[in-house]
Image (cartoon, rainbow, N blue to C red; front, side, top):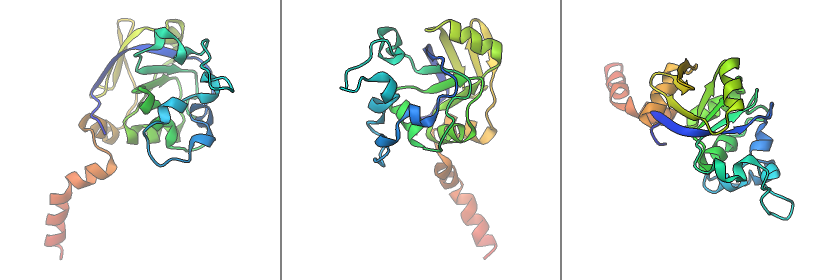
Amino acid sequence: MEAVKQIVSKTVVLSNDDIDTDQIIPARFLTTTTKEGLGRNLFADWRYEKDGRERKEFVLNQPASLGATVLVGGNNFGCGSSREHAPWALLDFGIRAVVSTAIADIFRSNSLKNGLVPVIVDAATHRWLLEHPGADVKIDVPSATIEVNGKSVAFPIDRFSRYCLVNGIDQLGYLLEQNAAITRYEQAHA
């Protein structure tokens, strides 16, 4: 996992409320156990016609969205089933953070474990972002803030998840970092 300290990007806005994990990555693409390549199927039913052609009107297919790594979603982003493939698909596509007023708990947990930053903001900040697609934002993980329209807005993130993101490790990596202390403890209590 890559360390995530700051994300500086323009935003891409997908304002739909209740975007569920089956919309993020449809179930028919869950036959893989690898993360690579899932990005091409991100929002597949919205991005592509039945014959595979891109829908030009879909926001991720528009030239203005190229290079954006921060997705602003509607309220209740990531609801639905607990598929880890959803944050994998977003990350493989190039999205590094998702911003909303509410992010489903399981999706949020899966995101944090995989290096995708879930940013929950207040209604006024969210409304401004929805109304200004392509806005420049700066997400600072160590301070748990997002800079929007000249203002710094705090977002919730637990200390352990923040540590893992900033250091580019997952839960197993954290445990492996503690190996010397674990060994000392085991030897002292053998």
